[in-house]
Each structure stands twice: as structure tokens, then as C-alpha cells.
Length: 442
Ligand SMILES: Nc1nc2c(ncn2[C@@H]2O[C@H](COP(=O)(O)OP(=O)(O)OP(=O)(O)O)[C@@H](O)[C@H]2O)c(=O)[nH]1
Ligand SMILES: [Mg+2]
Image (cartoon, rainbow, N blue to C red):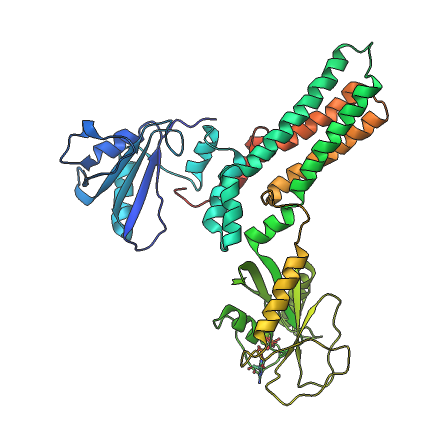
């Protein structure tokens, strides 16, 4: 599966900037970089991994002034020959330089293709490759920290230890398969069962970080719900600090769900403003209400916004945070149990208390007992769940004194499932899925 063509891309974000960086990787990368580069020093002196100043030009003329660095494989990000060209950070300058590189024989890289090559060349395992994008996308310090730990190989090391332990058990069992007349003696049987339990426990500790992982990557799902006109959109805008949603005195203003990302006290939140919940004959509004209900079902934290100027508050579901809004206006006093946090989305009064309650609830919803090993993603979770199930099957077979091969079969499946996390097994199907979500040039 190793690639032998040369790929190139602009690795910096599109748009104007001080500098743009273009990367080339593959057998011809350094040769192409050299062919486009003119420097006072002889090209023979292009010391690897050092920036050299010069002019980029091709047969069409001068393209730009800039810096070139070459990284002969395998000591490069991808493990292949690489060249990095730093030019002025203009859209056209960088595009023209890329075109020149492509004319010299490179091909435009697909999203994530550099990191995919790094993985295929053994520079990193799959969890580290995934962590590259997690680092880039991290929106809070905690998420960044977890991504950096993963990039350093935290999950990979844990998986490697689990695999070694599993292999140990499998090897032991398979020795019995080769000498069936001896059977597994009870002492060894107990020992192997203990080992399997220990391994399963380690897998479950990793699985316990999945919820945290989802929150760090996607944010806590916070949903604002309530009757039309209660002030949900006003509250969303307040929490975001800018006017994201339309606010009006007409009930039923918000039709679709509106989702925005915000960091509250360092925790990432995906806040969803919803259509006011009411019976309606308007088909569009009805669809909005359906979407609102779906958002509520999937929420980690729900804030139910009530208008305190109304005399008949709607029913509140258990676990919801109640925000009694519009306290700047003359209010009716709700009968118990409608206590809640008193706020004014208009003036901002009480907002700190509400944020405090939201953050506390979010913390409660994802406090895991286990010390943070790292925070696995949904793909890791699926693989590890399968592994835990197979281990369960193997344990049962063992307890039922099944033949050693019936114990070792599910253990081998577990081994494969664990291997998929880091990419030692079953990579063909998953590579495309993972790297498609990457930036071009990474
Ligand atoms: N005085 C006062 N008015 C508020 C407050 N919060 C919202 N409003 C007003 O109430 C009206 C409805 O506010 P929205 O934020 O649009 O309410 P909503 O819950 O999003 O309404 P729908 O989208 O129709 O479901 C607007 O006129 C707001 O200006 C508040 O704290 N005090
Ligand atoms: Mg609204």
C-alpha cells in the first residue's frame, strides 16, 4: 500500500497571511524543490533540515522570494523525501508556486495524505495520526492537552500493553491446543482467567474515557428549550457574546435548530437554540418542534427557559436546569416547584449563576472514576467494545471448561479488534474514513 508518487499541497490555511508553507512529499520531492530554487549558495550545500534563503523560479520566470528546507527520508514527517517551501502568504503567490510544483511532476495531495503516509511508513500509529487533527481542532486547553497526550502515543502505549498481555494468554492457550491430551490444568486455567479479567478491566478503563473524549472533541451538548418567546434565542446570544440568532417579540421566531460552539469556563459546549415547543398547524414550525425534541433527547445538559411574566408555566422534565427569564420585568410569582435560576437575558443579570449551574451539570455528566488515561474517540470505542465482548465470550468458554481452541478463537478476535485501534489490523476499511476529515496539506 506504500505510495511511490510525489504529492504536494499548500499546508497553511487559505487566505492572506505573513507566510504560506507548501509541502512536497515522495521520491521526487527534494528534486522538485531544488529545480524551483535559486540561491547564492550552491545547491549541493542544501543542508537537510535547515532553512535556506533564495528565489523560487521556473521557466515562466520569478515566482517569489522565500525559504526552502529539505528533509531526506526517512527523517521527515511522512518518512519519505520531503521539501518545504515558505513563500509570501498571498493566495495567488502560493497558488502559482503550487502550480509550478505540479508542473514539475507532483500531484495535488488529498486531505490528510501526508499524515496517512506518515502512518503507512510507520512514523506513527493510527491513534497518533488521529490526534494530529484533534490538536488542530482543539478549542479548549483541556481538549488540546488530551490531544497532545494522544499524539505522544499515550493511547498507543496502553493498547500495545493490552495486546502484549492478550498475546501472552493466546500463546499459553495455543500450547495446550498442540498437546490436547494434557488438557488445561486447573491452576493454569485460573491464572489465565485472571489474566483475561485483568485485560478486560484495562479495556474498560479506556472505554470509560469515551464520554470525556466525545465532549473534548465535540463539546457538551447544551440545549436551550422552552415555550415560544421565553427568551431562548436571547439567552443563546448572551452566552455566545454576539447576536447569532434572530430575536423578536413574535412567538415562533426560531424555526430551525441553531447550533454554535462556545467555551464556558474552559469547557467546550455545543449550544443549540431550538424552536419554541408548542402545538402548531404551521408545517415548517412543526418540523422545527420535531427537531427541537430530537435535540432535547440527545442533550447532555438542558436549560429550560421560562418567562416569569407568564402566570402558567409549562411542565419541566427531571434533570433540566430551569432559567426563570425576564426578571427585569414585573413578574407573576410561579407556584412551587418552579424554582430556578433567575436571569434576564436582556440585561445579563443572573447569567453568571446560570453558567455556573450549566458547568457543574456538565462536569457531573462526565465525571469518570478512572484517572484520565487519555480520551478515546468513537472509533476507538467501537473497536474496544468489540474486544471487551470477545474477552467476555472467551472468559465464559474458559469457565465452562471448553476446549482451548474455543477460548483462543474469541481471544484472537479481541486481539484483532484491539489492533484496529492503532492500525495493526483491518486498516484497509478505515483509512479512507479517517483521513477524509483532514485538512489538505496535513
Ligand atoms: N424584558 C425582557 N425581554 C426579554 C428578555 N429575554 C427575551 N426578551 C424578549 O422576549 C422576546 C422573545 O425573545 P426570543 O429570544 O426571541 O425568544 P425565543 O424563546 O427564542 O422565542 P421563539 O424563537 O419564538 O421560540 C423578544 O422581544 C426579546 O427581546 C428579558 O430577559 N427581558
Ligand atoms: Mg428563538
